[in-house]
Image (cartoon, rainbow, N blue to C red; front, side, top):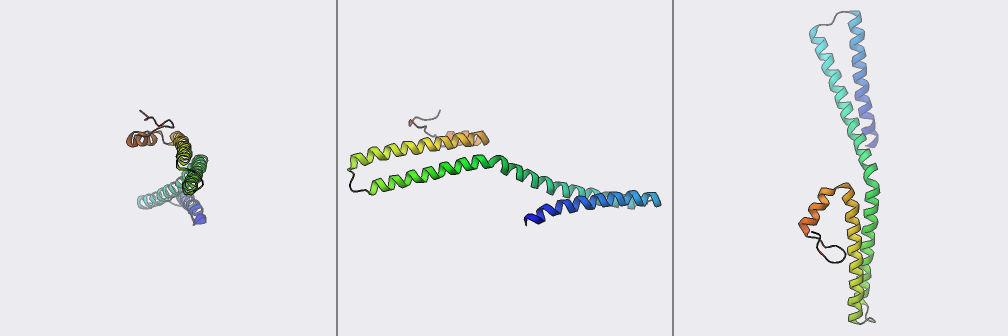
Length: 151
């Protein structure tokens, strides 16, 4: 599939060039009817537009991935950190050797750590999609690390 997406635009653009050169060559050997000129121009225009569209779409997709990848990597690292924190909470809550008041203190510290990680992740995404992050903060009435509302 990857190869087809790379070959199709080149084929369409090549056909467009061949049609344009053919029109020029035929026009030098004889006079073209209006119908022939219109048909050649429509075919040439169609193949050039289709080839350019496919090529442009592919190029923009590649560029988007190149731009977004560092942010996605950072967000993925933060997601792993949140899962590890949740695992620590589960381990502590199931540990019978620790008394309940100590568990609460430890779990509270881990939750604060998770909120800090989530705030950092939101800051990363704010660089890319600031309006969406702002809507999320307002819509969910999110708290920052100190537990205060973001107003």
